[in-house]
Image (cartoon, rainbow, N blue to C red; front, side, top):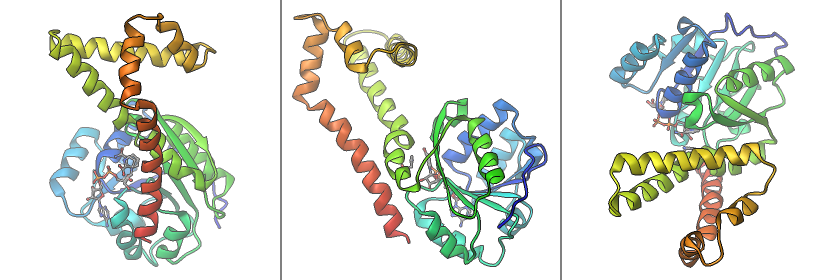
Length: 280
Ligand SMILES: NC(=O)C1=CN([C@@H]2O[C@H](COP(=O)(O)OP(=O)(O)OC[C@H]3O[C@@H](n4cnc5c(N)ncnc54)[C@H](O)[C@@H]3O)[C@@H](O)[C@H]2O)C=CC1
Ligand SMILES: O=C(O)[C@@H]1CCC=N1
């Protein structure tokens, strides 16, 4: 177990995986100027074009050779799909040093599983951010295994705080967090697609329908942040008896909207657990 603290001004971070979530995280890190680009190395399975494109966008160091990322980083971020996690970790066996911190953003895969694949009792922080990291508005659930020191936990927390808010949780809670806020942006985008589409179908320009939808979403989110009213009360304040909102909500109820959203979140959480079990 390492008790070393990690200085964010000098820390070398290696991303193993260069997909959507890494792009979002790099974008957020760049905007906050948390790290200088030369502190960051990225690698992926084999897509050189993708590495070059991220390197040119963010100035980070693209490495075709995973070994140099693994040996040359103080913090290693595992960011491949759950199905690729075992192979990636097994290939790292014997290479992880005791002074390195492993951070995983992989859905469903437990720290004990990663530890087993790596073949060493190393510090692992398992996280679940979301793609709003790109604009500093992720919400990240974070859980540490027994080998993570206070300093290492602080380093991971500061890293994710730079791209949003952070909740330190029990590891079991990460699967439901995955279903709620990890996958959550997609549910919201789906809602926007539908509202915008309805506006356009009814005759508004696409652009105006988009603006009206997004501003409505933003206003509602800010209301939830800035008032102490419960969402149900805020909903009631919009709903005049016998009025338009009531008519709209009745349609949502007829399609069992509440149940659909609840089931979506719970099914996504269950899927995280399935992925963890399937690829262990
Ligand atoms: N996309 C999202 O909104 C979020 C994704 N996650 C998690 O992040 C992980 C990555 O997701 P995405 O970025 O969406 O996937 P993606 O498919 O866009 O990217 C996966 C990356 O992993 C790389 N990869 C595969 N095997 C590798 C190996 N052995 N070594 C190094 N790199 C390897 C691929 O080349 C690719 O660059 C997943 O485990 C997912 O559960 C977590 C939070 C949010
Ligand atoms: O869809 C997925 O599996 C990942 C995890 C959370 C968001 N995207």
